[in-house]
Length: 626
Image 1 (spheres, rainbow, N blue to C red):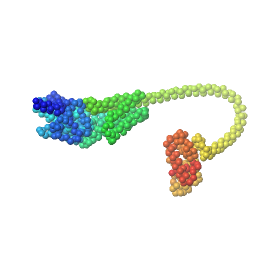
Image 2: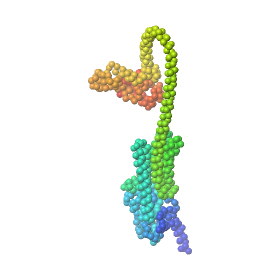
Image 3: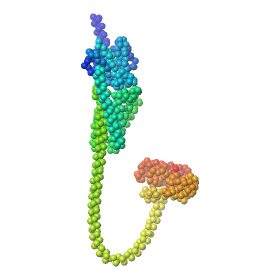
Image 4: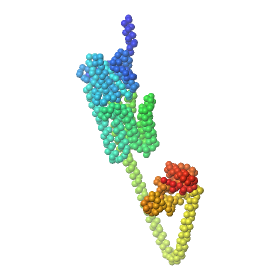
């Protein structure tokens, strides 16, 4: 009775899941066994302090938890995990088996094999040099010695700084060789296609010189970098001596470059900046928002606020805008939409696989590879379709231009016919009038003498009128100039005084020099007028001085008559005009008016400081420029 109670107590105290662990059975017909369900047990090592000797003690054996998840993974990336599984080899042949992990980004992956009372440990993972692995392969692989005499117990220690699944497989070595050869053949074909598409479009770029092809090539190489980091071929062939680059490329560099190059290509291909500027701003805003969030995430943002699904937002946003462009009449967007639909589905599959929603297999693992190959091919067709579309648009424009020219020619012919008809009618009328004119020739000859006399008198009167008009205009201009120092002069009146650059230069020439000249270099008063006009050249040292040198208008970037009016308004009218009103009045940009008005105000302040009197006329500060 006491023995029965003791047995019952033992069963109640020790967890039942230890007894419920299923044993993996291997036979000759097996090609692949996938770890799942209750075939392994898990122990979390939060402090990374446990050893193989610790976990094999009864104390820790009771702490192993039976896996019941179809997609087990390291839920806490700060912890190490111990995996315990049992294998019974029912194979009657002499087959060799391997243990393979489908999580190549695991940092530290160790297999412990029992050797009597001790354990032999094998190491692999991304934290060691690639060519120190037992199998030179992108996946993590160990030989798995299986004794046929009983049940073999193995332990795996897993530590990964990113979320990695416990997706382990047992395969016969011959099947693994077959599978591995096909896998590498597929990957070589994949990278070969991408490289050929990049070279092909580079050659097209040299012909067309359109930067959309450069963005396409950069996007292709970003896709290659992303998959190199994802399938670990980059670790195998590129940065194998620098394992620390794995996480940098896979988690930081590749996703960001893929996003940026895709956005650049999309904006240029869809011609958002020119044809759809509102959509272009939305794409830029969405991308910058994610990049800002990403910068916060890798610096100060706590892990609890991480939202990895935000990465696909710029892609989805671009896809929606591409649809809007298509329905707005931009037909080349249809191939872009088709290609992007493929890659969007691939990204969704990757996200579903990474969070355990779908199982990892050859399709889901390489969905991005499939998607990228199909996408770059479709996008290449999209570029060709874009050229075809633009060619049709040009042909349509040329056709419309030709039709317009034909209409013009037709109208010119009609006009010519009308002119001929009118000329004939005029000739007939002229002929009718000729007889009448012949009869009046004598009268006209007599009248010619009188007309000549009248003409002479008219010429004399015209000269007098012209002189009076000139004097009147001169008085008007002088009157306006006098008013400029007092009453308000409108812009139209100002233009009568200074209608063009020559008038401004002539006025500035008289104001600056008059009959005096002193060389700025040698002080000589002798000069010659320069061949270019409105400039003087020293007769002694050949120093050349333009009319605008040492004035407010030196190195002016806009018409000088407008600068004159700004000077007048600033000094004579001060704040009666706002910058916006001034810019609208003289048709200049507001910033240009602001900068030049500021220059005038600084000159006025300098004049008041040096002369100790206020500026009364805008002419007083013209010669204060540097």
